[in-house]
Amino acid sequence: KAGVTQTPRYLIKTRGQQVTLSCSPISGHRSVSWYQQTPGQGLQFLFEYFSETQRNKGNFPGRFSGRQFSNSRSEMNVSTLELGDSALYLCASSLNKGRKRTDTQYFGPGTRLTVL
Amino acid sequence: GDSVTQMEGPVTLSEEAFLTINCTYTATGYPSLFWYVQYPGEGLQLLLKATKADDKGSNKGFEATYRKETTSFHLEKGSVQVSDSAVYFCALSDGETSGSRLTFGEGTQLTVNP
Image 1 (cartoon, rainbow over the protein chains, first blue to last red):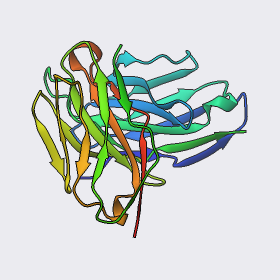
Image 2: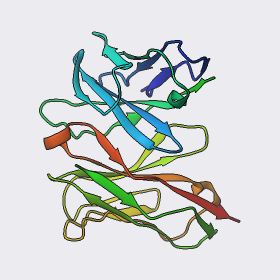
Image 3: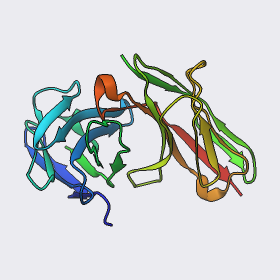
Image 4: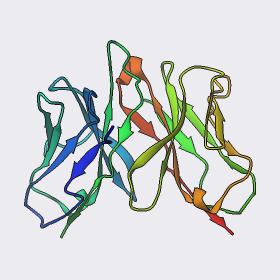
């Protein structure tokens, strides 16, 4: 079974631009979560989507948004990029069958975003 | 809120040495606990997990026991190899209060020398 895939793997943008990152979960997984990893702040939760609905949200400004499609694929968007948005953005998927909400999350390789 | 604290790194060991990476947590509910590993240039890989008190997770020679009384989940390996060099993250997921959200520790860089 294929793992979580993320595209693109690397991205370079300039301040003020916007960017869209894509994540394809493991087949059959319905929950997709996004995390930001930086040397200074470590791994921080951005948001989680389940059945096309945002179920949980971290403490990030409104410039960070996401969505999930009917096939469980997810995208996240960052508008008006700032230098501090340079990071590795990781996507994770989990089965989340039924009411059990602590299923193991499986991570993709990440998208490395550099803002100049 | 939930939090995870890992021992400060980096940790440098010789091959075949014993490894311990300490992890303690604070959570309001009854979390599941995880260890993830990150190799250079890659995403996170699940190493092991435990979902309730006294559970022991194990994989590839690594072990960790969920200790509710000390709120700890220390990672151990009896004999490390050069290939174990990576960054290790302790994490928790408190399904009752925060759904699938993972709260991570700071990460511990492990370097194993031949």
